Length: 388
Image 1: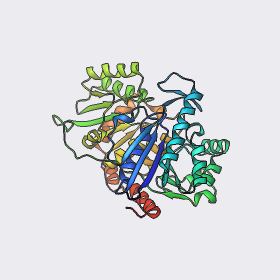
Image 2 (image 1 turned 60 degrees about the horizontal axis):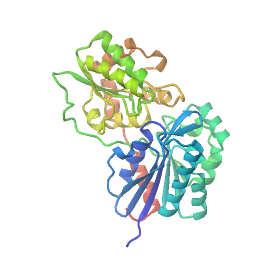
Image 3 (image 1 turned 90 degrees about the horizontal axis):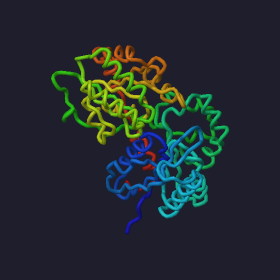
């Protein structure tokens, strides 16, 4: 049997959908003849996604973040320390059995509660695995990120345990080397890939415009903190009763049941199409005239991939990542946004009407936006192997 090139990917997935969706988007594009990809994830809903051939996953017990650096098991009722021990054992055993040629870590350099540190140390001694840290374009504001990285020794981890650092963004938009005070010994390993494109869908199907009305899709990603945005949206519909557009609302699977029930009952009265989870979001995005979201990295990539107009309502806690990204996109004329502290039905309806009727400038900029993320990653991987 011919030698395969094994890629191991790690996505800690304590909250939301962004990490696992980004990891799967990368995996689906890196697979080719002779490549095996195994994803280690804590996502409680990873089984809902379709996995193509040559890609599989290992599920570790899911954890939920209660507060900064405090996590509890998502489902099983055991001590958090015991749950973390199980996760670490599975990760370490998987890596040693799979013997990957490439290890790609999503966002967290040490893993959840530094659970991948033993694996990274083993790989350094093993000497046959190239280690990659994949970072989204923006982590948090400069002060918070540098303080956190200094406290946790992240700079030492980046310098000593990673072969390369892939930044999934544009240095011209936001420069983490400058913002996060990254020394040259680390910055020389950083590769700016550009944004990661998502699978698109042609404008067709059941969500196509009905009765001449435009379509607004509102989504909260995982949904755990999306209620205020969706509440403001429904309040806008309840107050103004617009007749020139219709709405599809997707709350996300992690929105608390009571909040989701409240939105569902109000949406029904307003003839809003309601889902708590939609497996093929690309179908909705392809047929939208406007997408309202919270501005997570994954959702932004999906909006731009479909060449759509986006209205972002970024959260401001527990980090400013989404707010900074919304400001960057606004500066680049790639989207518009509503600051969280200005969120309300009046502001929401004003922005929606404006973007539905006067967004040609954004449409033109978005239509010319170039995705380079996967091309750059292919180039890097092809430097490491001779299979593809």
